[in-house]
Image 1: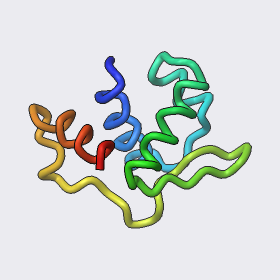
Image 2: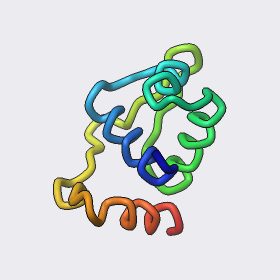
Image 3: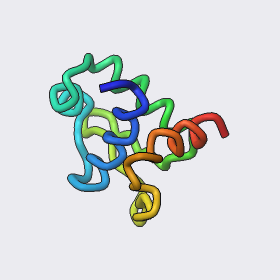
Image 4: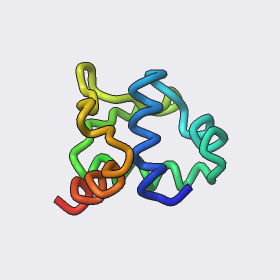
Length: 86
């Protein structure tokens, strides 16, 4: 899985399951915990409202969701890239 796909998948995973620890996300996505930390930082810088609580994990701000239109899989990676560059 490339980084763009993983960034989108991270948001969807947090949206679906709620708060999760970085270590657990690393296992889910088969990457290092450090990679998850970097990805969360990138998402936060792109404007995704990530909440990080020490020793408890990451979650999305209440009420945040990706609109259904965003999830057209053929375009989703390109849309995420545009968010990250904004």
